[in-house]
Amino acid sequence: MSINTKVTRTERVGRPRGRWLALGALVLSGLVLGLDTTILVTALPTLSAKLGATTDQLQWMSTAYTLALAGLMLPAAVLADRYGRRLLLLAGLLVFGVSSVVASQLSSANGLIFMRALMGAGGAVILPLMLAILPTIFAEDERRRALALAGAGVFLGLPLGPLVAGYLLTHYDWGSIFLINGPVVVLALLGVGFFVPESKDPEAHRLDWIGAVLEMVGVTALVYGIIQEPLKGWTDPQVLVPLVSGAILIAAFVGWELRMRVPLVDLRMFLNPRFAWATVAFTTVGFGLTGAMFILTPYLQVIQGNDAQGTGIRLLPMIAAVFVGALASDRLTARLGTKVMMAGGLLTSGAGLVLLSRLGADTGYGLVAPGLAVTGLGIALAMIPALDAILSALPVAQVGAGNALTRVLQNVGASFGVAIMGSVLNGAYRTSLNGHLAGLPAQVSDAALSGVAVAAAIATHLPTPLAAPLRHAAYDAYVTGMAQVLIVSAGLLAAVAVLIALFLPARAAGAKAQAETRGDEAA
Image (tube, rainbow, N blue to C red; front, side):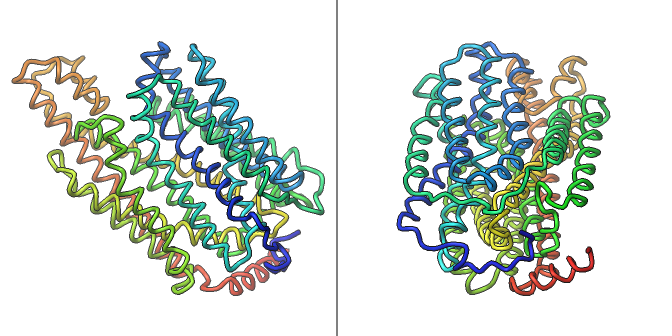
């Protein structure tokens, strides 16, 4: 079924009796993924001490999950469209839950790396399907409300991670950060099993295995190169070779898909401007905000001196704002329209980042809280309508694949955001700090230039006359680089907001007409 096929909402979905309980199960599925991502980052120092993990092993605990998630997401969603979304979601939850419980009982770093890869494989099924199932169980008049609740669950998991991790690591053994996934997954399995109806493409064709392999290997190579950049630098062969190879394979995948009569995923869906611009918004948020939040966390921990649990508590204004924005987005979108909401939400998030860019080394929490709240509010106001635009533009036969494609682009954008914004930060940090290292041994200076956390640790072992100047200089240098990153991210969000305001059709009907015209031209 092509992107231009007309399928009315009443044809696509009835009103299953347990649909709101089904939504609860889907929200739990997304929440556990968001929690797991940031819980691990917070727990890495503890894992290093308890398991004796090396720096490379710690890196691979995160990398293995990210690579499996990015590479398998699209093929998993395509299989779900063909063989049953509910069936594949149950399988993904089972894999994620079992691997989480096994990971909590391990005593070796290499075993944990393998389990993290399995958790990524389970997450690759859960992440696209938890939202792709919604159009099959909710009619149009309820869809936005359901998306708002589901979106709130997905977004809330990320900032809640440090809070949950801090509490668990303070009161329980390190394995609790993985074991906590078990009961949540059991509840999700029961909810999906009892309340989510099965849905799939009734006219499924033979799977495009060549396209699937090209996409998996290409995306995996690209993301691996991005992950290695902060450690090796852009010119290192371990970064360049995967990046170039991944780009070539993805280009080959696009060319192959456009030639296929029955492709792995119909790339002509990008001819629909609502789908295309909503995907751009998603990717931009992944690029800009993920990089910005990755850089803001060390500010809260190192410069303001908070532990993991304290950092999580200080993220509560963002959590509350995301929840409020998600709940308000339904009525606001009905009144103002998707274009105004997406553009306005991105501008609001940009304003929050500008506010956060005013932070200094001695700034208290009074400026952090409103900056986080404004940023979180903008995320929810922009992303919930974007999700609705994406899902409403997709034919029922490809709702899983289309949503997965958007998620893949968002994940690649987030990886690039962390790498590129990290490079901007490191460059500004080293330039600013370099002039304040006179009188220190070369080995100490080189270590201090590697990062603000290292500089702060070094300062604790230096005599007082040297410690205080080094600490203040490192903090000021980090804040200088952080401000540059936040301003760049805010500018990117504002630019995309302007483009959406100019080119996103105000109504779905206009988008459909444009897609049909462009499809005819392409044919």
